[in-house]
Length: 82
Image (tube, rainbow, N blue to C red; front, side):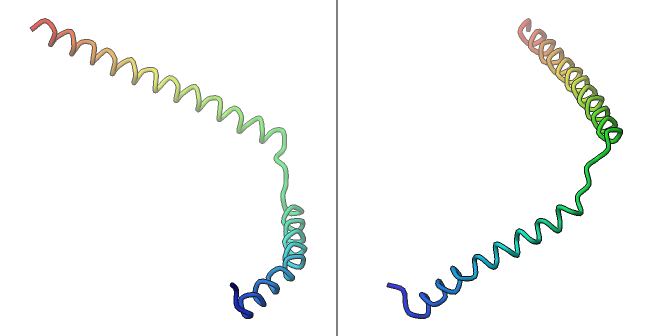
């Protein structure tokens, strides 16, 4: 059972929700007015950078995988014949 003080605190909290929600949405609207969308030139530039970076990382991991697999294959071949 909740005490009278706890019940009062719960009621106060529930009653303050509409004001808090209204304040929150007001703040969100003010912040959204500050948001700007990137230009199409900026989007194209960042997309190009991302695509180039993905290919470079892909090439790096391909070469790394190739080097490690060849090294392991040679090591297993070396030790299996002795």
